[in-house]
Image 1 (spheres, rainbow, N blue to C red):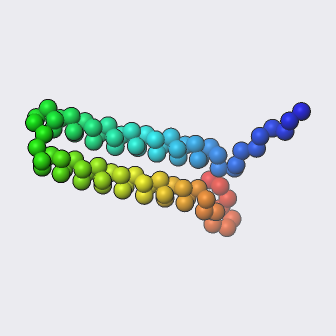
Image 2: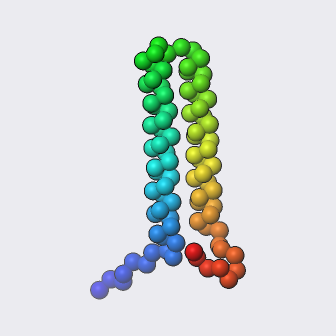
Length: 85
């Protein structure tokens, strides 16, 4: 009989983090696409493209920094004596 798989001690936290990051990405994307659609319906102008791309760039930057910070938190051991939350 095969051994049962052993999950890492913080597996539940990792799955929760992935779900949170996925929801964040969906929220940011839908907000940007909604703003784009609104501006498109009003008659998209050059300044609209400028505003949309700046906001999209800011969202991407914030999102990927959040991904990095989350990954770093998941591999950094807790302070001595505190164990996993």
